[in-house]
Image (cartoon, one colour):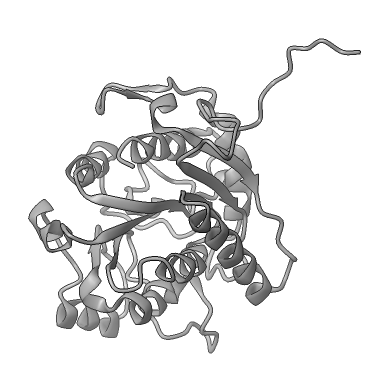
Length: 279
């Protein structure tokens, strides 16, 4: 019988026991509606491997990953080419996490995976759920090329579940005029920390599209957009959010193969570590 030791393909610092964990990390390798460069379905696996290049201690938050008490459940397996069935699988599994009294941390995959997460969570926090959305793009279209289920429409669909006044968008710098008018009408776009204060009494889901970061920091993404945040700016927002009631989160839209250096994957992994620290 082999004695090992063998390499661990789960996230560094995870609790191997689902039942005693507080947070469940769920890989969501789906990119079936990507409008430009596909490949984000390969992110969860690459992020797990890259996590072993991290320290498990965050000096910014003075915590270890072990203090977070999260369990890495691995990746869901999706039927290729079937968007609706894939979304249903996410919703079903996320609902099971909340039935068990835990919180989800999703790793995409494209941004549409956030929609079934919110659908599932809204059943448990019906009237008090809010979404904090980090992104380069508005994601407020009604449809894209005639298809309503698109990563370009994810926040518009979510706004029908949690209502626009419960959505705050940060880092947005690209979108159609109609989408910018939606943000202006509903005051979803904010530019400073105090814009989050109206959500103080809400149950908050944080969704981070990694293209919120500037392409100089994050070239490995499907739709890079110049003029974005630096890493420390993003983590500054996390630091402000640490006193809010965060009941779920995800990090999406890393497409690792567009950055052969591996730097984008390393950055994504550190974003995940820092976001875990505030949950």
